[in-house]
Length: 248
Image 1 (cartoon, helix red, strand yellow):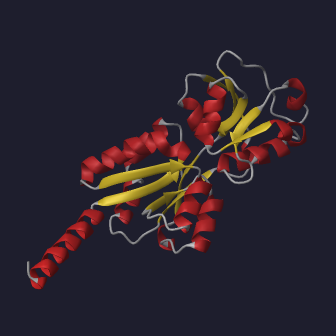
Image 2: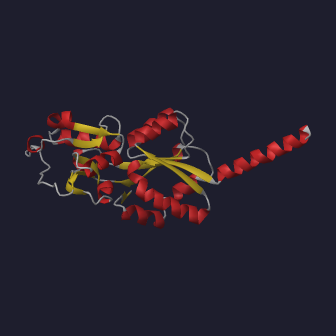
């Protein structure tokens, strides 16, 4: 095999890999979006022929992974804090960054273990409930950050903080509650997907920061903008609403 022939073979292989990469997108998204996005991504693939690879985890975990070089094309966070953090650390496509969804925060219990709760400072949950409370890590995972804000607003934080179990993401917290290990604070959309938990109450909107999901292109991959536009189509909107999200 001549050197020229080997060069041509390598060049063709490189071009083929580049073309394949253009027909794929790697989407990093908050764990709470997993059910809805799996369905939306399937629709996008059917409509465009573009293959979607997806990674779901806490927004904090995903932002750190991208910062450290993970080859994501799209990032969808469960809060603006981690999107802003990434934007300050990594050159995302700023013009593509926009809020797409919102959510609610709920208090849940294992099915069959529900009890009456009043979401006000006069009701003393730490005295009425002696077990553990599961949510996301309260210093980093968005659902845990919102939970800490809500508990502080209701003057329950000091009495409960020693009993809080911080999961790596909202689905981890939901799993703990499903197993009967604790009550929990999760998003409405996650509670809706489980037949093993009961919603005790929805936290007032003023008790925590607005739960906003921003989406942005991380890479300059040409199909990234096409994907973000698809999230704004009626097809995607109907799927998001089916899973309990509120459109922005």
